[in-house]
Length: 217
Image 1 (cartoon, rainbow, N blue to C red):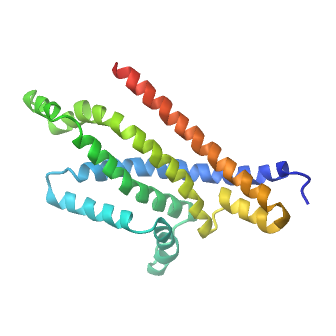
Image 2: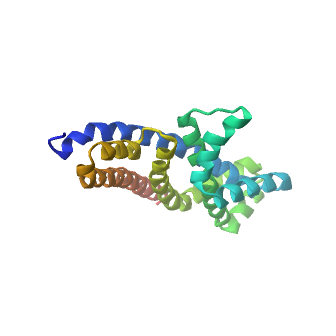
Image 3: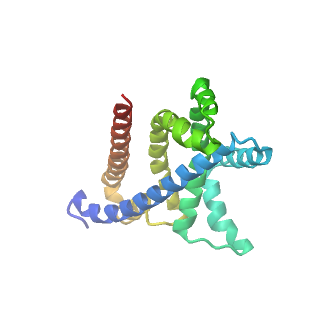
């Protein structure tokens, strides 16, 4: 039997490492997908708009847990077997990428029409308009909602417990099953560790937002 709640920290910290790794790579995937799908929704080609719209509606309209189960448990039946880590990153990244695409799309559309007209008047190529003028202005509008999405993504990593990944939640449940009398302490530690991770991420996003805003003044 443990002497105090401190004895649980090494095991929980080991799980926190997995949680942070999953969150980090899922966030990168989600960010890339957000821009690809968000800009795809604004494409002049109907086929690109249609494909990205279908992707967004499917991943926004279905449960993240079901998507995770589908990638990890269903794909092996058609000969595709993904490692737990990859399945977790794909499910979370694609799910949040669908939501993030709407952030990108709305931020780009929110750029004043005069800015678009100015780029045309300067005879800029489409990629030059987007990269040099539109995205720098839209990025400041994207940052706060992306920060909120990132915090939600971190909390969503707890779902990988259901495919038996040894993340923070999994380790806490193992400890709880082994030491029932310490359930309250274990779950309090679990809450605090998620809170600390999410708070640090929120602070980092706010600092980045302030720095970018100051850079424009």
